Amino acid sequence: MKTGARCGARGKRARMALRRVLACGCFMLTSSGCFSPPRVANIAYTGDPVIDGNAQLAAARPEDRVLWNYRIAASAMRVGNFEEAKRQLDDAILTMGGIITNSAEAERARSLFSAERSKVFIGEPYERVMAYYYRGILYWRDGEPDNARACFRTGQFIDSDAANQSYRSDYVLLDYLDGLASAKLGADGRDAYRRAVENGKGRPLPPFDREANVLVFAEFGAGPRKYSGGEYGEQLRFAVSDSRAHSAELTIAGRTVTLPAYDDLNYQATTRGGRLMDHILGNKAVFKSTTNTVGDVAAVGSIVAASRMNRWDGTRSEGSQNTALALGAVALISKIASAATSPEADTRTWHNLPQRLSFAALKLEPGDYAARLEFFDAAGARLPALAQDLRVVVGGPERDTVVFLSELKR
Amino acid sequence: MKPRNSLRILFPNTVAAALLVLTGCATRGVKNPDGVPVTQMGADERGFVAGTGIESQDLVAVTDRMARSILSIPEIGRAEVPPRIVLDPVVNETRFPINKDIFNDRIRIELNRNAMGRVRFLARDRMSTLERERELKQTGQVTASADPNVTEFRGADYFLTGKLAGMSTRTSAGTSDYVLYSFQLIDARTSEIVWEDSAEIKKQGLEDAAYR
Image (cartoon, rainbow over all chains, first blue to last red; front, side, top):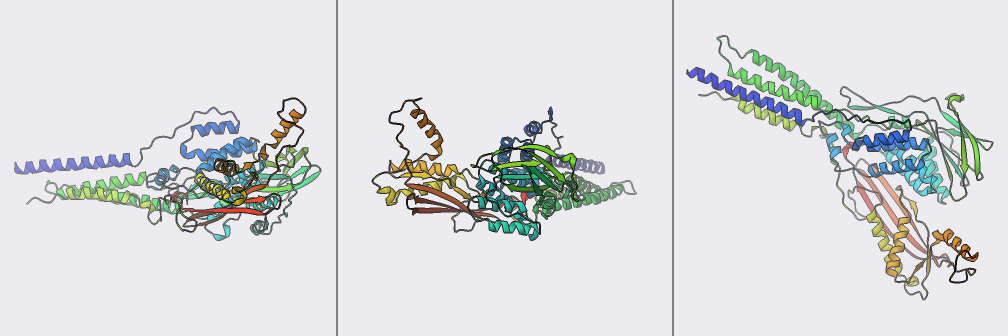
């Protein structure tokens, strides 16, 4: 009778313990971020990249807003909708132009159980630089070369964060345009020109022409794409390919203006070096791996302990039972924690960036000109499929005429 | 003697240990993972401030100071006839794109508010509109209260100009931006600088580790 009462009490305790384990497991499941499938926006695509982009922006998560600002701005530039591009870039710069601190989303991105993409997207340095580069072009188009210069300077400043000193602030065009704007404003642009020449690494750069009133900004090729690498996707990597178009020429008013590639975004993306966030993601990956291993070991131990619960004489070993339950709890918690850990790198990409950037300045009388833009491969062979015919309207002396040309259509 | 129930000791300790382990491991070894909050500093101090660009409080502080400073010079304060001033657009040499007109607009407003008529500003940015109006009067398309053929547009006695210059630094410890706001009052006849003043603001901050 006494023995039977003891066995009943022990069984009750074991059942209570098991309930606690299950409760803990449920708690872990709920607290580690209940998975809800991403919203699928019901968008009626029109084929217009700006309209479609704005529809996607309206349906996007708040954390992705700046990403869509960027994409729409680039598309808008290419279809000549510069007011829309300005609006999108100004919206983006409001978010990414400051210093983000005390952000709940950023804190979540750093935590174990949320992915990096929980944070508000502002882009890698090359993406932020391009936002300022485009905005600078638009300021210059509006007759504000000093604000344009400010944008180019901020772009170069953003690039000063590269891990390797050699790759810091190494955009050629940002310094060159900084200097050109200074020269046109009556200031001294020689330091900026010198830096541009150094960054150019032997590529010839034309001297500043203060009298030039037509500024041609060209871009060609397809820019980098992000993907994740490593055992758990914790490493941010860039997929780059060498685009066919290596240079361009603009024929206008009987003249041929060469447009060599001065900057390469594939190069910029892949030479930035490691991020502090890579260290955090690495820690998450280690934790994920460790808890997974602990879970495996504890599960095996639990099984072994459970196999020894029943003695040869038919009695139950309370010690083995308790050990099995405890190890089972550890295994469950560890496995849940491992499964819930999110070390994946953020691969959200400004996917419609070009690979190569070019620029030229020339002087033309006010008027309406027919022009032809042609692209060339690395060997200098013409790429006829990419050629474009266009019209350039040169305005009066009150401001420079800015011409934006792109191989990309959207 | 009842055997110790190891589960009663082991289970809560296991859970507690697990929770301890689960909290914040990923940012181990990361300095200032939350970033650094915003404070304001003097130009000669070293500290940490977020939002290092040109912001509205800078505009207010700078333009207030410039307006008070201009009114204290004898060319303005003791002028027998209110001097006419033309505002030249501020030149931006910083890395921050700004609304340049807002600086001159605020200085003009503060001066007009505080000068009690001791200065007058010339609306040179409206000249095309004013010339059009004069032309309408001269051709009789609209009425005129005075002879429209008499040139009454005032010439400038002084030009008020400004420049924003900056210095920026970026290291692993954060971003620092210094902006020098300088303004001058230039005699339109002699080119003498009759007044000059400046304000300087320096800010520093460090973004969240998620963005580094």
